[in-house]
Image 1 (tube, rainbow, N blue to C red):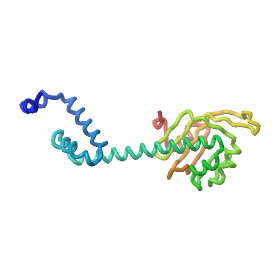
Image 2: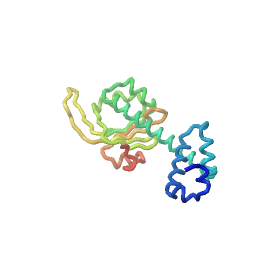
Image 3: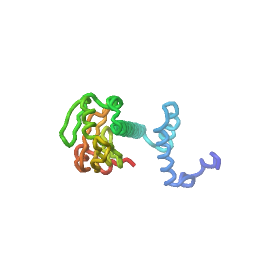
Image 4: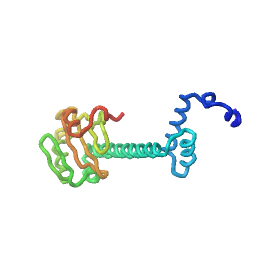
Length: 199
């Protein structure tokens, strides 16, 4: 169908209502992902053909950028937490210190301490290796559901249990870590819930 033929027809004869709104939303989504140089043509199409006002585009763009920023923060939080667990499992203290705030707060079964200088002693006393089963995360906060195995100094297994490790990551480093025996307590402290599971 040529442009001249389309001009003589009503909108309903060219495109269905469902197709119209699908195309409109597709263009909006494309607009959000475009760089500024390529946005103008699509913006004009949305404004003059699809009757979207500029304020709506601004609001959609702001919401998109906020969501994009939150997703980036969450992804970074997960990466730092997983690196931290990996290094703690092999007791790589130098690497752990690079991932840890100097004034980190550490909460465990025997109480709490503050400061990264406590890390080596904390890990030695626990002599624990963790395997992550599930991750729950939002923003700077993450709860790891983990299978924990405690070892004696001679390498024999002392015990095994499921634990829940809560970390808060700020500035690219772990600023808070706490280990709990149950999910309810970990969720209460972190503000997370089952809906924050990462698949």
